[in-house]
Image (cartoon, one colour):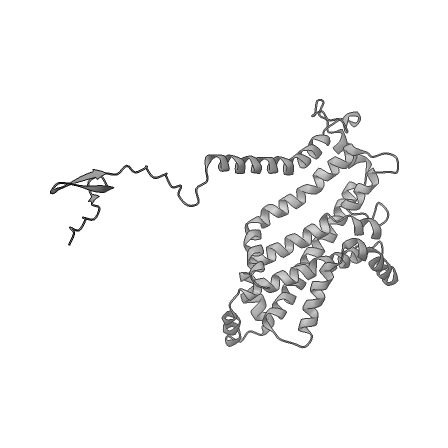
Length: 316
């Protein structure tokens, strides 16, 4: 029988495989040449080129998002003859703001907007919260048709609803009345907010309701004292959405309200544009002043916005 060939040895010192060759009675070990392994990038770590591309994209997106707002702000300080020029502000002036305050009904428009947006926000939060809690905790006849109705109303574009709502408000005598505009904005804000609040209440344990009933609270007392304090993030999102819906809406405000004494801020901006000309200076100044309350509202609500939107999207 032939002599068995020895298996390849392994050089433990170098950590490299070795070849064996017979030479008479001895065995010679020859280290095999092995290419060094390529460095492995840790998982989740980007290459320098990918990191540069990501940051460049984010910077470009930020510039695109901020540029229109910055340009409106700069235009509000330009003289009347240079409002449409592409130059940055050379001779800054406050004339546009002075004209807006002294020669227009800006403060009346502002008061009307505060009234409409404030009432819409309060009623929108209350109706959406109570509706969302009811469909989340209780089972009652007509619950599914109600949820389908809230969902279907969000499918119609706002432009389609202007004519039927205008006719309805005219029959009820609510045209040129803040009440008619408030009801209109509630029809936009409540369906979406009720669905969102329903998803948010689904994430709150039912055991909290049961403990409230054990302590003698009725369903509304349980909702008011125990559930609402836990629902602050969802209420912040609902309030912010209702406020923005009423504060910056233009189509309904222009169609339903006529006359300087009844216009809101969004409708008042229409007065700066005629069939032949556009007064860009005062219009941009009004746009800047309109954005200030929305920015202040966002600053106070922003710490709850992300948590509320995330929680409301977890369950439907």
